[in-house]
Length: 150
Image (cartoon, rainbow, N blue to C red):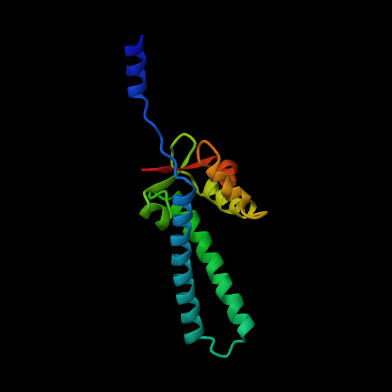
């Protein structure tokens, strides 16, 4: 009987999920990338076009550029064949559906907007990653996704 269970267990592949700290580090990497690109784009716009704008308008422009950049960054990278943002990719992780398939743009959009819900209150939805069996944050559960390690 033990030889049968050994054979069955050896044929089952184990999925390694991206845990809290690894995902947190990926989020920091992605944040730095978005910050640098956003500042570069905003600075270029200010330098070439709008040197006379007020500080409030310049700040609004910067946050608008970063928001639009973040939308494209997360949605298109996570639904692409890469299946990961640059931070996740660098750390050997990817976003998949619960059955291991690539997510589509619609699911990527839902997952991104679910991150805002995960942040309320006190980022509890993100902290759930440390305590769930599949290391899912609230936005992962809402979108039917998991982060797996390659």
